[in-house]
Image (cartoon, rainbow, N blue to C red; front, side, top):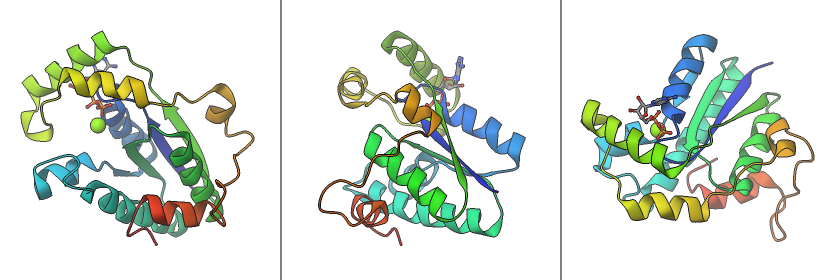
Length: 174
Ligand SMILES: Nc1ncnc2c1ncn2[C@@H]1O[C@H](COP(=O)(O)OP(=O)(O)O)[C@@H](O)[C@H]1O
Ligand SMILES: [Mg+2]
């Protein structure tokens, strides 16, 4: 059985650092959208292009799982619905999903984001104080049951299943 490792946490939590370690440990394919967004578009969102890019990366993730490779999905995944959709999709191709949540407080974020900017400026973009506060206002922290993968939520009303929901959340996912 193949495994999708799902990184969860705010900017500066250490997700990409941990994703690199997991990829090496499990010989997994790491999919970190920032590493595509910055070279392609010079920004992390670029007028909705991040959602399109993530849809393509998710498609590749499922292809890799089907082909026998483990993958690390390093999107951040602030929303419970996003995380549930990705778990459902992994399980739909016979893989397991293991969530890695890295909690972080704002002071630690500020220090790490400054460290990243000082050491690897080509891999990152500056972040504002508003970005940090906005993150804490919108992040949906996973609870113990969610982290353990128990009691998967049904797809929200109006969607046949999580695949249909994912195709709208991540245009280009197929
Ligand atoms: N556990 C840690 N302790 C201290 N510094 C860390 C830790 N994990 C990552 N860092 C540093 O913090 C910065 C942000 O880490 P990164 O992995 O890019 O976070 P994220 O991908 O969650 O935004 C980097 O400069 C990294 O070297
Ligand atoms: Mg990162």
